[in-house]
Amino acid sequence: MPAERRYGMDHPHYPWSPMIKRGRLEWPEQARVALCVIVSLEHTEWLPPEDSVQAAPHAAGMIRRPYPDYSRLTHREYGHRVGIFRILEVLEKHGITPTIAIDALTAEHYPYLVQHCRQRGCEFMAHGVAATRMINNDMSVQDEQDYIQTTLDTLAQATGERPSGWLGPEYGESSRTPQLLAQAGVRYVCDWVNDEQPYRMTTPEGELYALPMMLELDDVHALWERRVRTPRYGQLLQEGFGRLYTDGADRGRLLVIHLHPWLMGQPFRIRYLDEALQTMMRRQGVWAACGREIIDWYRGQSSE
Image (cartoon, rainbow, N blue to C red; front, side, top):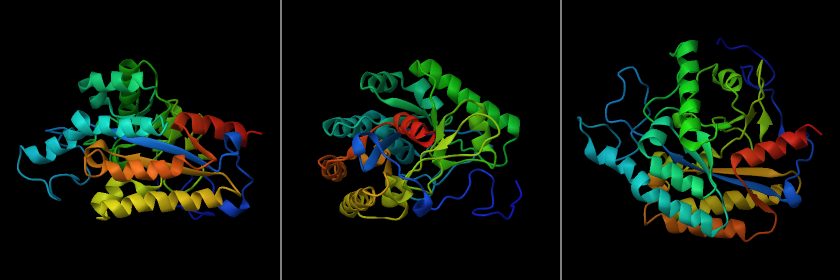
């Protein structure tokens, strides 16, 4: 899609909207902050398709080693075997029901995890086919449509419910992904990280909203890519929340935290997540909700 000069960014996916010019957004029971925790369950293939696009390995060193790279691959699987249960226990302790971003291959290969999350009342969000297969602009329209449809159909069969939310593997999209997601019936997407409130995206058909994450508080982005020390990361969670809580007295704010069980589920890191969530949830005026609940509420507010 060629760039076009316009008011705001050079694309047609949404109109520019400065925060100070918006009307008042009110969350349920006059909450100042809507808190959403997204936990990713993603499959890393031993031998991805040759034409697949992948991000940095994020585990067992910063470069890929000759096949089979057991330490890198099993480091990621730690999240499925151990880390996810530790994170879910902490979230339950603080009364937070997470949104589980799960890809198609995880849903197929780990049915126990699907059932475990279902029993805890988690919402399932579509997370592509696999962590090793990012959406990208080299895909044809038909290939991307098939990719999205395969993901949604697989998750609907595995979880018993068609997901309404989408998070691309490694936040990956093509220049047409929002339109194709809306066309497929997806209601909200988390790949756009540019706001502290939800907003409606511009699509020729369907109805699609952005649920923006706070990218700098994504645990991979902070701990692995920027090398933030874990105690400092816990402080950042609390400081970020504190400022949003203050600003939320004027207009409701949104804090979406993205966690990866292979990283934050480690025994020496979980304490800092626990402490940060305790600080957040002991304040009055915090609405902990899953992604679908937040978008449904926002949609009702924005239509009034």
